[in-house]
Each structure stands twice: as structure tokens, then as C-alpha cells.
Image 1 (cartoon, rainbow, N blue to C red):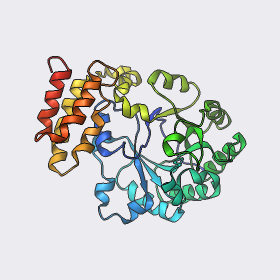
Image 2 (image 1 turned 30 degrees about the vertical axis):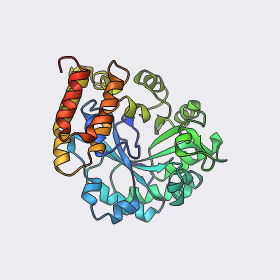
Image 3 (image 1 turned 60 degrees about the horizontal axis):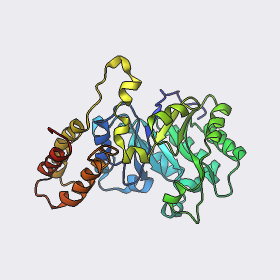
Length: 331
């Protein structure tokens, strides 16, 4: 399949982050921002095809839309089967992980190691494109190990595009598959934004999304002068309120009100209460709240109180309300 229908460009995207972009985080984030495109954690084809609790694995709240799913796998057949399944759940995009450098992912022959095998990636894209109507994107690095020239990156983009991929999310760092941990691979290899800009210049008909080291909206706006979109990861976790004014900026004609931190927490509490009644883990439910008061007075106290006391509370809802009264005047 050579061409997919051109999709509306989502200029802001929240990166798929294992253990972080859970359904609870995504629900919480939508209380802050509606416009950014959200991604699930990476889900392997094996998990999707074999899970006895597929609805729990793939289901999501309608408020999470627009939502993309990231797949991990290297078998074109398995990926096409998984793509059929996830399409039925109402996702807006399928993303193939060609960027994760972890040992566990490598052992499964997917993630960043696939960057060395563009033919296999192209086969995977072609097989998925043949069975679903969803747009399929690829998230990759600018290089992996000794596969680190710009010419190789451009050839990779071209070959995978010809198989049907119109959108490439490019982390502007190379990855080392030995010698660096996944965490180190996120910070030690130097950023090379110019290569991503150049890819957009050389492939103007593709949607190119930049990822890596984007710590704020003002920085993102500068990158958007060069590329179609930005993907933000760690900053969206540690300081999610960064995105509180994004809806207003993207749709000023809609007169969107900027939510306060207090209103966000209060809106999240009914969800938290219902999830607890359904047996969800309290720690997982609370994790998205930690960064909400980042950078403002009381932020450290907020995190400390959540860490120290919530696990001991018989009623976490009342506990959070008590912390709010301490942190936010007149809460």
C-alpha cells in the first residue's frame, strides 16, 4: 500500500511511556487538556493476541480520545492480527515502536533494534495497512548503534513510507543497544534536531513529529516552525499543568477556560473513587497527581503528603481533600 489518506495533523502529542501513560493518567490528563493526542503505553502483540482480559487491556474511557495505541512487535502477521483487534476498540492511530532500546524489548526483536532492518519494518507496515483503515505511524530514533548516518535515516524513512507509513515520530537522539540503560538512552546521546528538520525538508509530503528534550510549550512552538508536530514525554508526566493553556492557544475562538489545579483534582476524585470500588490499585490511581503542583508554592509539600499518608488512609478521597485544604487556600 503506497498511500494512506492524509490525516489531520496533531501538532501536540503525549509520548507513550511504559508505566506512566496508563488509562488513569490519560483520564487525568484530559481534565487538563483536550487537544493533545494521547498514546497508550506500548502493548506487545503477544499481550494483545493472548490476553484473557482483552477488554481490560485495550478498553478506555471515551474522554481519553483522541487516543493512539503503540504496538511492540516484529512479526508482520502478528501485528496485522493485533491491528485488526485494536481497530475495533476505537483507537485513532496505530503506532509501531521502533525506538525503545531496553534489553527486554531487544530480546523480543522489536523496538530500536528494528531500525537496523527497514525491510522488516516495511513489511509490518504493509501488512497492517492492508487490514485496517487506521493511520499507522512509526516512532523511531535518528540512529541505532553504528547505523548512524543521515543517509541511512533517510533511506529508512523512504523505504517504510513506500510501504504505507505517512507519519514518523522521530526521537532526535540515537540509541545505544549495549552500554546504556533505557534511562541513559533518553539523556546521554546528544540531541540532533537538525536531522529531524532536514527529514521534513527532504520529505515535505510526510508528517514529521519531533520528540526528545522538549520541556515546555514555548520550546515546542519553536520546533513547530520546522516540523509538523511535537511529542512530549517526561515533561508531561512531571509537570502536566504545562498543558493547561494549550486548548485555549489552539482554539482561541472557542473561549476555552483554563482549568485550575484545584478544579482538576476535584474533577478527578469521582473517577478515583469509582476506580477504587472496581478494585484498581490506589498507588496507580494517585501517581498522575504527583506532578500537578510542580513549580508552585506547596508543590513539594503536596508530593510529600501524597507519598507519606495516602497509603495509610482508610478514605483516600477525604485524605486528598485534606491535603488540598493545606496546599490551596480556601480549597
